[in-house]
Amino acid sequence: MAKIALGSARDIRANWSGNVAFSPTEVVHPRSEREIVHHIARATAHGTTLRAMGAGHSFSPIAKPNGVTLTLDRYRGLVSIDKDTGDVTLRGGTRLWEIGPLLARHSRALEVMGDIDRQSISGAISTGTHGTGGRFTGVCGLVTGLKIMLANGDAVWADREHNVKLFEAARLGLGALGIIVEVRLRTIPLYKLHRREYAAPLEETAARFLETSAVQDHQEFFFVPGGKRAVVRELNHVPAESSSKGMGRVRDFVESEVVGNGAFALANRLVQAVPVSKGSLSGAVSTLMPAGEAVHLPYRLFVTSRRTRFRECEMAIPACRFDEAFDTLTRTLERSTPSLIFPLKVRRTAADDVWLSTASERDTVYIAAHNPCHAKNDDYLRLVHDTLAEFEGRPHWGKMHWLKEAELRSLYPRWNDFAAVRNELDPDRLFSTPYLDSLLGG
Ligand SMILES: Cc1cc2nc3c(=O)[nH]c(=O)nc-3n(C[C@H](O)[C@H](O)[C@H](O)COP(=O)(O)OP(=O)(O)OC[C@H]3O[C@@H](n4cnc5c(N)ncnc54)[C@H](O)[C@@H]3O)c2cc1C
Image 1: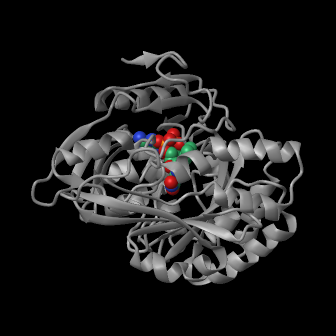
Image 2: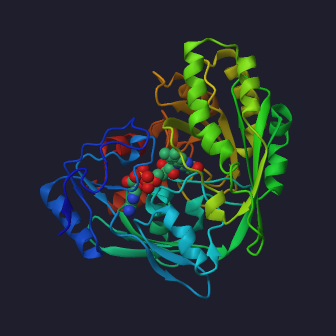
């Protein structure tokens, strides 16, 4: 059986942002369903817990093990593509960056992706990873079926016709129900994206966001606390035959250089060394944000690379409460934000019917705040979190938050259904951890 010493395949001593340390008793990298069954049986026999880990890109301790860590790093790739429906079935450890090129070879594509593509497909759906677009759901909404290994060692296929309750729960299961070994996703014919980025007045951008994000395929905007300008990013689907352009120097500028990487990290350090007024800071930041345009394949334009590490909190609020929530948040930040200029980011998704999805049964706007890794505390993230929690905010499961079971259960209409599936399938809590129990109950 494949048994690998800690750290020998890739560094899994901490999550991507470095704020959650992992110290599993053992790390196993099975290559087959048979080996996964073996590890389940062995953990059960030894009375230890088994935690699946994807790429370790969650900011919260959701992947932190309390016993054995199981990764599917060696269980990746294409299982099949259905020629009639276009649905693709992938092994559970497949990384998102592998999916785009794989689908393009079959003239298919994912209809939406988030900011980055380093995650595993199982990790992405298990925490509700999403992109933006008023007509698009998060990734878990694309799942049309999955195969999961349960605590009793059974491998079960679940979709809308078979094991329906398991399907509803495991499309976003927080790793609590079993090891996902295959995921089937809806795809659409291959297309290209036309991306535009431009600066605009913040107040007007926010006031029109519900309207514009319903028309644009994928729209989002960034703003600096205390600032008056927004940077808007729009991605629209164009035919696959469109000529590619603009992937040169402007490529990824806004997110990868300004938001995600060097420019803001440098600015943040300067701010801490030399106090500057928020007004002059945000003016300077706006000038860092040029307009840009590009056309390319979706898996090239949805995502960016992130070289600078940060911590993030993201709250999902009902779209119908966005205006009041945004107003309250910007006023709060105006009054009390420390001199941080990592921009906040605003995105939108359609409602879905996934029980624990942050967009479950509600059209949703997401507001995300970032803290540079060198920040001494997360008071700023906590402020954004607490402010948006007042507007029925549901925290992203893979990002930092401070809600526990009592608060969370009141936010999800299908909470008890999920709990019933978990109790039935994992009564002895093989897949549990103290952190998971704090969210779902022990
Ligand atoms: C730089 C950066 C950018 C990001 N951008 C976005 C974004 O644009 N949109 C967004 O929504 N999120 C975003 N995220 C958050 C990220 O998508 C989620 O936290 C995601 O869960 C990480 O996937 P992972 O493969 O690293 O999973 P991990 O963090 O390793 O695990 C997450 C959960 O999945 C479970 N899991 C993993 N594999 C399996 C399996 N085979 N079976 C059962 N359970 C499993 C784990 O037990 C755990 O509960 C970003 C994170 C980073 C670091």
